[in-house]
Image (tube, rainbow, N blue to C red):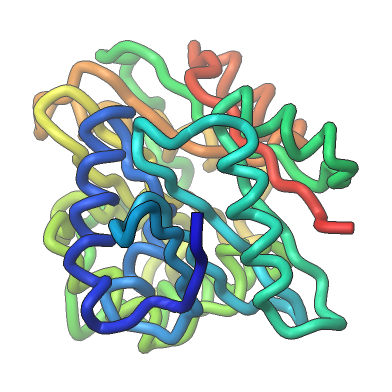
Amino acid sequence: MEFGSVAPEHRQAVAELLAEAHRCDGRPPLSEQKQVDFEGAREGRGFVALVHGAVAGYAHAVSFGGGWEVELVLAPGERARDRFLELTEAVVAGLPSGNAVHVWATHPGHISALEGAGYEHFRELRQMRRPLPVDPAPPLPGSLRLAGFRPGRDEEAWLAVHGQAFADHPEGGGWDRAELERRLSRPWFDPADFLLAWDGAELAAFCWTKVHDAEVGEIYIIGVDPAHQGHHLGRTMTLVGLDHLHRVRGCAVGMLYVDADNEHAVKLYEHLGFHDALISRCFLAG
């Protein structure tokens, strides 16, 4: 296996590899942020693995917090543990030295390969699912009213609440207007699926949903203004989003992602009937 940076002549082959992995696994092989990066909306660093001159693997690294975060994709026929570890070590060696490198793995064999190579477990992300429909959501407390997102009007209010709710989150924090616009321009975006709870002119909470296909809908991002916490708005907005996905969009399964160490959120989602569907782990390169 040979390694190198992504050249223009590799991009189509990498796109085909990502599509093949998606078909094989039934889920996108890259997180949406890195998929957006790959498509050219934001600078990232890509690496390819070549077998007999053909693209057999791809790794995408983005810089954050003074370090690097890496996701790797191998062709379905190239997923042996040693292949994954070989690609991981090539990427780590190819990144600027002196910075922390965090590597994500989902397949059990790849997780055990990193553990066996001495990589330190750093973070765990749980994909949770539950069947729909759900019980009706309770009424919004007080004078809160629900409305869909209004492009061109609600961006700054949403960014302010999102910034406070996700100030310490590794992916969610630090969004600016340009980052929001990148997400609003994604093919799947529909403002009617972006639900906002207003207290007069102030945004109190939101539940942004995303339809994957006719079967699955996701609670994409959910947040509550810290000033409105203590009224179970997180639970209420989760039920509002799930009800919207089923009643309006016809989805039969609700999905979301949550950090395993966010014990409060995990307990809430388990109480609402969610169960683990996929576990991804992040490791710190030694």
